[in-house]
Every structure is written in structure tokens, then in C-alpha cells.
Image (tube, rainbow, N blue to C red):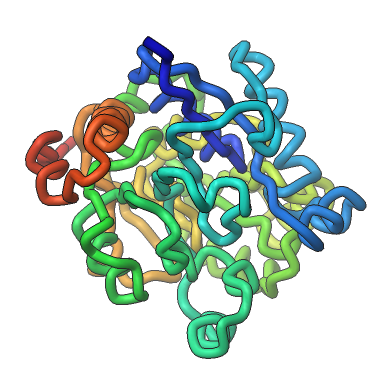
Length: 340
């Protein structure tokens, strides 16, 4: 019998590592991987390097390709090599033409951007979803299943226009087992951690000077440690930290999850890592309300999200008419509450 062929479309290393974890539970399938890609003028602009600030090129694409090669995965860039039975993707801001007639499973990457004026324009004037960044995640409805982090996110995406009968609460890899990070060798403990963003590198506004000064106030004399975003201009960021938060430490390549596990306080704005802090019971400061974060925090299922998503995928390939309700019951998703 012919093996089912499955294409996994990555993006950031976070998205790509999620895809890899899911593929580990589809041993009966032939799994192929591709960096994120688009069509037409998007593909042209990416090829010219104009979109290197996004997951379509630049450092994001380079790191994804490196991840795929280091894990010895089969690469089929843009999915042109095979006729696929199923396609996984970590984003539906762009849905390539060659997967629109396939069975597609969208997997939530993490936190989504708050809605803004661009979200309104996209929703009401049929503009490209990518204009409003991740605030429009799920709004394409060009997928068969949308695997999300929690019941809170199912409600959020449904309110945005995603069809609830396609949303499956599975938890998401990388955010479903926060307690594992408590065992680590990061040398610092009991500090105030700041996870910065790449807002400026992706042409969004951020008053970094104001943000750093707010962090200093929250720290109240405690050791302040900054973890810089992988896509960030390191030299500029370190200069700003030294100027506005003298004595603070800055790390670029350290494991952010281990740093969160060892800190007392976590400060961030729109980063998904806030959910690791929430799951571990840290004092959290974010641009989002604490009550909202509590509702959205990914279910902690001891790292079984990838297996649950793969199980749903296998059922979808075998029984194309299976309902979300049937899948939800089949995978028996449970919200396991973890307390330090």
C-alpha cells in the first residue's frame, strides 16, 4: 500500500520545530518539509530579498533551513515534488495556491497580535491578511482543521471569523509542558527577566527607551536580565540597555524557557513566551490583561500536543468527513493544571 505523503510548511524555528514534533507521530507517512512560501508578487519580492524581515526570507528562512538540515529532514521547497495527501502549515496569512485543493491542517504558533486598524481593513475590505500580521490568524478558513492551544483561543478565533466547527483544541507543541524547563543549567536565579521583541525589525513601532525604563521600575533594584529576540539588532539593543538600565545583563542565544523557569518576574509585551511564565506561576507583566492571558494560556498536557495533532491528522486522512466533535472526543484533550 502506498504511503500517505504529508507536507509540513514551517516558518520560524518555533513553527518548524512544532511541525517536526508532529511528524514524529506519523511514522506510517512519508513526511516532507518546506520553509514558508507564497505565490506571485509575494514570491517575487521574497526572491529579491525585500521580505527578509519576515518568515519568507532572511534570518528566519536561513535558521529554518538549518534546522531542517540538522535534523536530516526531507526538503521539498514550495511542495512541488510530490502530490500530497495532507499539508500542515503554521500560518494561514498566506495560503499558497498549490495547497488550496489539499487537506490542510493549520497549527497555532503561539500568541497572536492584538487587533488594530489594519485588522479592521482586512476584515471589511478583503485586503491581504498578512497586512495585519498575526491578528488575522485563522481568518482564511482555507483549512480542514485548526489546532489551537486552549478553549480560550478557540473562542477568540471563532469571534474573529474562524469557523468553530473546524477548530480543535489540542494544545500546541513547545508550550504544553512548561514544567520540563525547571530542570536547567542557566546560572542565574531569582531575577527580573525581560523578553524583548523584533517589532522595529519588522517595521512596527516601539519606544524601546520607554519600555526599558518601565522595566527598571518594575525591577525595583533587583537583577534585571534582558533576553533579546533572535531577529533583533543585537548591537543596537545592547547599547540601549547599557544606557537606560546600567548593570542589567543581556543575552542573545540563551534558552528563553530556561531563563523563564529561573526568574521571579517576567516582562514582555506581545511574546508567546509569556505563556511559559503563566504556566509556571510567575509574576507576569504584559501588554495583555492578566485575566485574558489566563483564559488563553495553552493547556498543559505533559507534552502530548504533537501526538494529539498527529492522531487527528491520521483520522482526517482515513475519514475525510470526520467532525471536530468526533476528533475532540477521540483525542480526549484534558486541561492538566500544573502548580509549582
